[in-house]
Each structure stands twice: as C-alpha cells, then as structure tokens.
Amino acid sequence: MNHKLSRRDFLKTTGLAGTGLAMGGLGLAPALAQSSEVVTIPTWWGPHELEGAQAFMDARFPPDGGGITVQYDYIGSDFFSKVFTSLVGDDPYDVITFNAYHTPIMLDRNVIDPIDDLVERDGFDLSDFDDAALAEWTYDGKLYGMTNDRGAFHCYFNVDLFEEAGITPPSSTDTWTWDDLREWAKALTKTDGDQVVQYGYGSGSDWAYDLLPGLAGQMAFNEDVTTSLLDNPETIALLDLYQKMMHEDGSTVAPGSLQTGANELFLAGQLGILLDGTWQAGYFRYRSGDINFTWDVGLPPRVAGSENYYIPNFTGGWVIPKTAPDRDASWEVMKAYASPEFATDVMFVSLSSPPVRKSALEQAGFDQWPDNQPQGMTREFMSALLGNGISRQEIGHLFSSEVNAALAKIALIYSNEGSAEAVLTEVSAELTAALGG
Image (tube, rainbow, N blue to C red):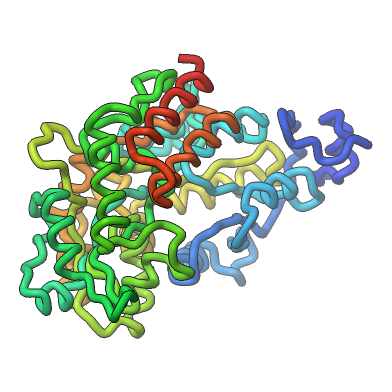
C-alpha cells in the first residue's frame, strides 16, 4: 500500500531523530510515493498574482475533477524557515518555488532532486526556453527546476508630474542618462518649508547591490565570483552621484528614510521617477483604482559615455523536494506552470514579467497595453530590456554570512555615514577576503 513517511520515520531515515531541526547540511531522504490529490505550493506572490495563477490551475486541474488539485500557500515572512520546517513535517510541500539565486542553499542542504529523468520520460520540449534562463537552474549538467518567471529592473514615470514640470519623459525605449535623471529629479521635487512633499526620484531595488554597478557598465564580481569589483572607479562615481542626489540635492528618497516604500510613494503621486522591479507593473495595475495619474515605463538610465550597460535579471522557478509525497503529481503541476499558456495568460498579465519562453515575446499579449497602463510596455520595450539583461552573478554561488554582512555595509552610503569611495573600498576588500579571491 502506498503511503507517506511519518515525521518520526522520516527523521530516522535522515539520522535526525531526537536531534531537533538541525537544518544546516540537512540530508533529506525521499519519501515513499503516494497518490496525492492536492499539490501544495508555498509562495510569496501577492493577491493579484495569486488570483491569476490559481484561476489558471483550477482550469487545468478542476477542484471537483477527482484528480490533482492545486493549492497555493501564501507565506508573508520567514519564507525559507517555514519551507524547511515543512520538509521535515508530516505534510511536506509538493513543489517549492523561489528565485534562482536561492538554489545553492537547497543543494547545500540536499533537499531537491534533478528532474532530467521526468523531462526525458515525457519528452518535455525545452527548446522554447531562453538558454540563460535554463542555465540558472542547471548544476553539474543536471536540471533542478523549471522556470516561467523572470524579474528585471526598469523605471516608472509619473507622466502628469513630468508635464507639470514642463519636461517630456523618455519613451519606453529611449536612451537617457544619470545626468538627465539628476536634473529631472531636482525639477520634479517639491518642498513645503523644510519638508519634502514630492520627490523626484526613488528606488525600491537598493537591495540589488549589482544593479547600479550594472547601470555603470560594470560587474559586481569577476567571472568566477572570487573577487569583488565594486571598488572600480565607474561604480564609485555612480554611487557617489546617487548619494549626492539624496543628501545634497534633496531630490531623492534615501532608502529606509520613510515609513512607506518607494512604490507606495509612487502610487500616492508623490514620486516622479521610480526604479524598481518589473513586478511592480502588475502591482500598480492591480491598484489602478488608487491611481489618479498617467504613468508609464522606461529603460533605466545609463552613465553618459559608457560603452556597456547591464540590467541584472533573474528567474523564479519551481523544484520538487525530495520529500514530495507524489513526485509525478508534482511534475504534472510543474509542467502546467512551465507551459506557454501560463507564460502568456498569467506571468505576463498578472506579473508583467519579461518572458522566459521565446514564443511568449511574440504573442499578442502586448495588445492589452494601449487600453491599460502602461502604454510603453511594448514588445520593443521588453526586447530592449532583455537585450541589455544579464543574469545576476550571485546565481550559482552560496554566499557565506561574511559575504552578506559585507554587502549590507553598502547601506552606509545611503545613510550618508561614509563616502561612496570609502565604503566601496572597504566592502570590496572584505568581499574578496570572504570569497577567497
């Protein structure tokens, strides 16, 4: 009779009985297969994203159909601790979703299996997927996950504020510079006495330490990620300009200086230019009832005279944990997630994500935008965004606590506790030492 391992039996197979949840270096043994009707997937997607995804899965796997059904489990905080706790519980998740740069920790803890055998068995065609996207889920020649979800970074413009200031915002495919940004941010800023009531520029992506180096045409690390390159002159100059925009011009929201996020400031009509992730477009469309202004999108600014220009991106994906009760059921749901229909009907519409499937970039889904903001999110815009894209270098590397602690010190620039040159020189030395370069 097929059954699922009890938690106690599972702990015995892993040698963890009586030891508590010793998650570091956890070696998980596969559970026995069972005929499971409900495939449960943990996620951090917001309501507007989950609504589209759940509707798609309910249509593909009808809840009253007597077979597989799909259930998303929203986790708002402590995502990975709750996921790892589930894996040693009596009812582990059937599929796990996360961003590609989190895969190394899953491999380090031995909690996921490759899926090459399932791909080969079912003849699942991988040719339509972007090669770089699949590479983010491939380790030692083995494919561990499927992806249909790419995140990148671009700008959002409050068109009404631009017009009020007598400025024409760039079109979604225009090339513009950080010098333009600084000038426009000053013009878009309004004060009431000593209080800034409208900011020219803000970012919700300062956590992406490689974004500004990329926009300066530089890498954060060398090719094999053993040496930091954050102390190069171009990156220092751009971070120095960003610091001046915050603390000299007063035109730019300093990260952590306000209780609200930069995206909420944009929604409130109090921010002229926002640099944030592609996913914000779907959120703003979901909140369209709260927006009383015209908004649009555009490429990030580049450094004047720079030959290179990189927009870091990364994919999200699904993997099957070793403890999945019914591996075949998990795989069936993963194939639905990775399908062309999910790409065009869910990812593009609900999340506004750049396509991972090549065919999705050619679909007519872009026709929705002329009647639904932002009008600049065209096929040409997505092509330009992807054409300048590069996978985050962190993908494929398990960063130590020392590396993450050094990266966190970049925030000292934003809080004006150190110059860009001093902070990045120190951070770069600590990163190289921690990485062994």
